[in-house]
Image 1 (cartoon, rainbow, N blue to C red):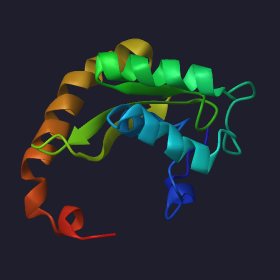
Image 2 (tube, rainbow, N blue to C red; image 1 turned 30 degrees about the vertical axis):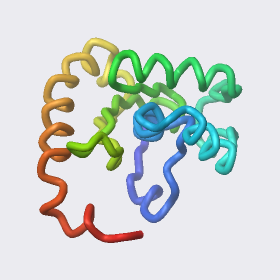
Image 3 (spheres, rainbow, N blue to C red; image 1 turned 180 degrees about the horizontal axis):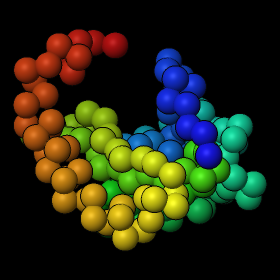
Amino acid sequence: LRYDPTREQGADVSLAYSASGRAWLSALPEDHALALVAEQGLTPLEGAASGAHIGIGELIAILAGARDKGHAEAVDCFLEGMAAIAIPVLAKDGAVLGALSVAGPAVRLSRDRRSACLPALRAAASQIGEIHAASFFFRRQI
């Protein structure tokens, strides 16, 4: 397995196939989330596992599950052999600021390991949400 994070530098996140995209979408109103996915499309990125393609019905179910659990996961969806778990980062007023994730090789970031990462991930996302106003990057208008 080779993971090259520079591959994503400057690239749009895959909303439907990445844990971060799913976490972010799950915190948005469903119609807005689906409009963003429709704009980007449902074609998996090059390098995703064969059979990773999902339909809109599957995505709606994935996002509903992420809303219920408060986090999203992706295994072999973004890149074959990769697993990730992500939490939406929310401002105090409930606005979605982004997502915080942990990713790694699926053989090391097993379901149990991803679950074990959740408390720290939730705490970090909460802290970022509480102090985001102090950051230039969150205050600037894009």
